Length: 152
Image (cartoon, rainbow, N blue to C red):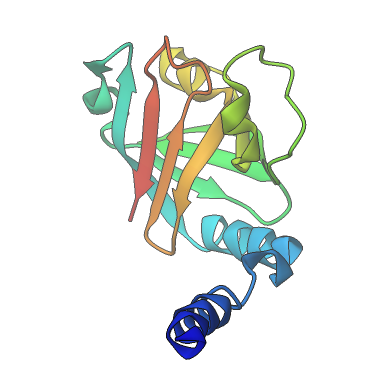
């Protein structure tokens, strides 16, 4: 009878002994993400502010995130320069005063000004997804309902 109880207990014990995700190197993950962002030109595939789709405001813009932390937005004959930085999320609360559960997300900070479109992008964004073909960002203030997505 004890063998009937021991077998399921052992199965549960072995199932719980899987590889721990905390052993991965977060710096390597961040470096990989930085390299993906800086690898080529990007276009805005979605921009919403307060739930209003303003993606068309970025039609024709190309964005280049350089490895040195500079950013260039090009529209026809006009170039606008700025900076960008990708930082690792934290277990401590940030200075936004918003939802503390979003602090674990990496943050992509864009500093670029020069026209209304660039002023809207100049922000500290939470990274929802960074791949070789997509960058999905959102504002940490849920009330603003601001979403920014880049694609290739």
